[in-house]
Amino acid sequence: MQQYEQAYEQHVAIVPMSRFVDQLGHFFDRFGFRRNLGRIWAVLYLAPDPLNQAEIMHLLGLSAGLVSSSLKELEHWRAVRVVSVRGERCTRYVAEEQLLRIVAAILVRRELEAVCHLRTAAGEVLAAYGNDSRGKTLSGRLRAVENVCDLYEALTEMIGTLAAMPTSVVEHTTRAVRLGRIIRASAARKLGRDIKRSN
Image (tube, rainbow, N blue to C red; front, side, top):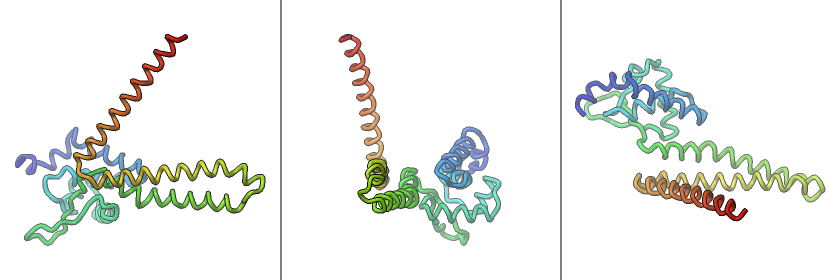
């Protein structure tokens, strides 16, 4: 571990660590964030000790302004937090270790807000057209939109609940979901064979 701590900069610069850092950048990008937010989170996540802004700048070759604004944004999403180190004046940062908690925070604080606005807009259209013929035609489609909003809210709540639980619970839940998928696929194959036999 001591060698890793002393040579962290070298580890970040080589494959596969550099690839992981870049993939985290793409992962964050898929959620609509700047790619460097993911890269900064990744180097903090992998670091053996908390890092300060200058160290992050050096590791990733980024400007002071970009690192500063990115860390503020990551703090907003609870993806990183400030820690104090005895005897040091500079601010140091550590990454939220549970990636699921970051995803849950993003879903609750950003995507869920958009879903709520969509539900409100669908309700307003329903109210505007009332019971006239056009309203009856639209109601089925708008109810489908509301159903999707309901499902999204339920899934977001489930992810938030899981994110607050210990890692072992998340792992067991993941295994249960995978087992359910295997059972469903097996049942579908058996049903397909039974249909072929009956024909």
